[in-house]
Length: 335
Image 1 (tube, rainbow, N blue to C red):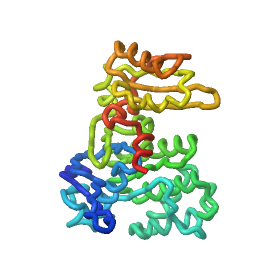
Image 2 (cartoon, rainbow, N blue to C red; image 1 turned 180 degrees about the vertical axis):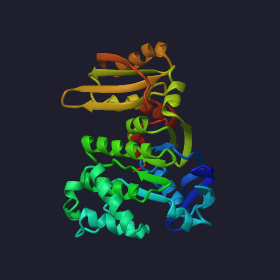
Image 3 (cartoon, rainbow, N blue to C red; image 1 turned 120 degrees about the vertical axis):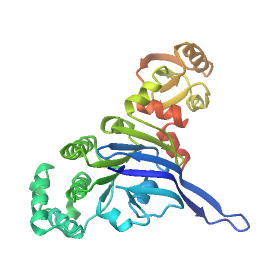
Image 4 (cartoon, rainbow, N blue to C red; image 1 turned 90 degrees about the vertical axis):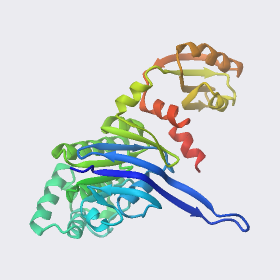
């Protein structure tokens, strides 16, 4: 059986319109990406907004052509065999406003079932079963324009599951959902995968805890390039020797951001409560011995320690170590 997804040197370049008299600028949204994802994997693509996740998914879904390189889905070339690829895939995006507002949930799912060529009997059976399975049976007659964000995303997931794709692309599927609905959505994804272990999901997210919970393997993508790829446990184990600390300080008086510039401290989170005069910093050091120096540098900025604790390495800490900045910092710098 061929890989569910395979890419070699996959690149997508956007050319920005130049200012008068200046040369055209190029932006590599996807830069020389090599991936191989096997049938049955729930594979996570992790990175901040602007890292290239959505562009890569659009290429694999045949919505964009690559500038160069090769990509195959279920052994089919995404350029030469794009129609056959589309028969084997489906895609759900987080926050998408899919659907016709005047249709009900059931009517909307029926429309999509016909676009995918399901027979009447098969479509009705799948719609009824999935509405019941995913908790929307009682709301099946509700019009789309009256749905909450959470209910709309449940419907979108059913739309993705209903066609029985060999490969399902989930682009930030829990984006904008409250914690309870996001937890339900993750449960739906796990249940759908468990029904048939030949199915494959490529899930993009910038919620690293979500990836750690759901994914068999993950790839960290930053500035269009794959920086690391392995199981969450293996990535964490590779950095187990790092020392992760969280410290709460007072007295920094606007100096907190200078901690991010410390070359030896990889800051994954910095929360400054100006009103309370407190700053909480989570950071990674190469080992325990480096802590004394880090605390001395904080003291030099006027910081007084209120609390200090040591923590286990998380996927977020690994991302900071590999990418050199946190997800939040990367998104801020790309604005």
